[in-house]
Structure formats: structure tokens, C-alpha cells
Image 1 (tube, rainbow, N blue to C red):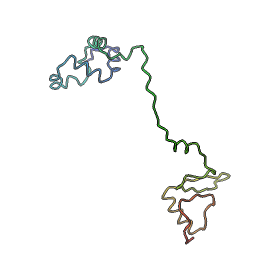
Image 2: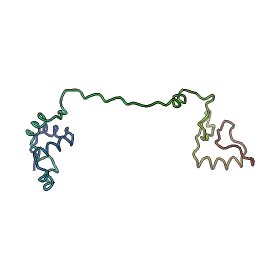
Image 3: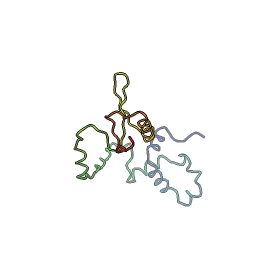
Image 4: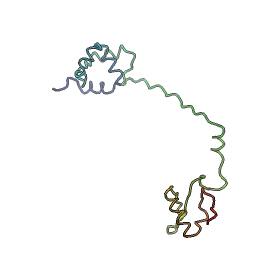
Length: 149
């Protein structure tokens, strides 16, 4: 069955929020009727667009096609702690990595590559270090040197 709505009607219906459509439906139909006949409201065929336009003119809900600008959103407020400000503006004395982060510097061609190690990389890297001697001196380590090295 072809729709009784024009393309303009479809644009109007599609532009309205669900809350407005629910309020419009409730202004026409009783809750008991809506509950006992849900199949009638599966699509938009139940909507009389002339009544919908009258409802929108009388209701406090503005039409989405209105030329009035949307209200500005309220600004987001963020509380800044003094400790956070101090931490944000202090620079480390050296470009070291964060505590607890292990890195490895590799030479690829003419470039040095800084590799950030995952936990599993750190485990296998520690095993390699035991067999091969010391690693790159610029490598940071979260663990203190052990007596066995």
C-alpha cells in the first residue's frame, strides 16, 4: 500500500524527536487504545500531518525547521587541582621515559628507533640480557639491578 504522505511530510516526520511524536500520539489516542493496538503504530501511516502541524503550532515544542538558532550549550567546568597544575608545567631534567616504562634503542639503517616494550617483551628481554651482557646504557629499567648480574 503506497504511503499517503508527501516527501515534505516524510521530511517533517523524520525530523521530529521521538518524544514529540509520542506526545502527539498521546494527544490523539487513549493509552488503552495504544496498548491494545500496537501494530497500528509500527509505521507512520497513522500520522495525520495536518493534525501534526497544528499540534506543533500549539505545543511548546519548536519545529526543527524553525529559523531560531539553537541555544548555546553551557560551558564545561573543570576543577584544576594545584598538584595537577604543578605536574603539568614542570619539565623533567632529561627526556627520560615515565617510571616503570622499559624501552630499547635499536639501530635500523641510519636511524635510531626507540622501542617501547610490553610486559611480555620485558620478560623475554630480561632473559636475553642475562645471556648477552648489558643492554643499551640509555635503556630505562623499572627494576633495580640484581646481585646475580
